[in-house]
Image 1 (tube, rainbow, N blue to C red):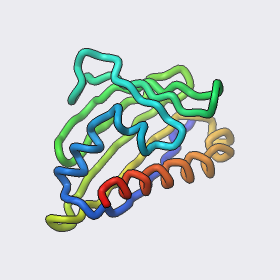
Image 2: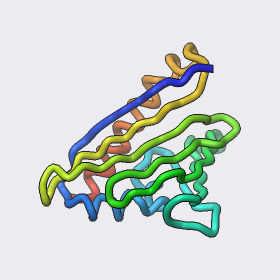
Image 3: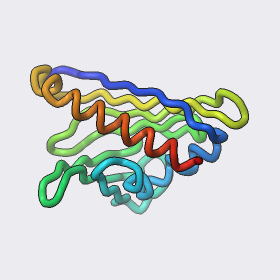
Image 4: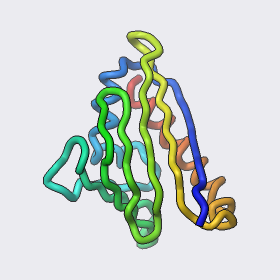
Amino acid sequence: MTSNRIAISIYIDAPIEKVWDSLSDWESQGEWMLATKIWVTSNVRVGVGTQIQALTGLGKFGILDSMSVTSWDPPFSADVLHTGAVIKGSGRFELIAVNSQRTRFNWSEEIIAPRIIFLALWPGIFSGVRISLFRFARTFR
């Protein structure tokens, strides 16, 4: 298995605190992430130790992604560890205040998978995440 990285950055016309509040509301992420439903599965709902599941797919077909929040530094960053049967690796959300009304959102994932499988799936993953991030940015208009 190989560690494979995807990283995307976008700018959002909103203050960092407002972006963080929306981003850290795990279950509302399903409103802007393509074909994804998200729910918190732990008693801990905020910060380190929060357990999350995300089902991404269409109709009856999907992939369940189980995650655990491993670091929490509001309003700047959060890290998750992917612990599911299919998706393994880590993810990071990082926010940087450009000014009082604009935020840079850096999203990255380290996906543990055979390189050939990752390369085959990369265009779809990259496109889906990019579209989702731009949908998120539009929620601040």
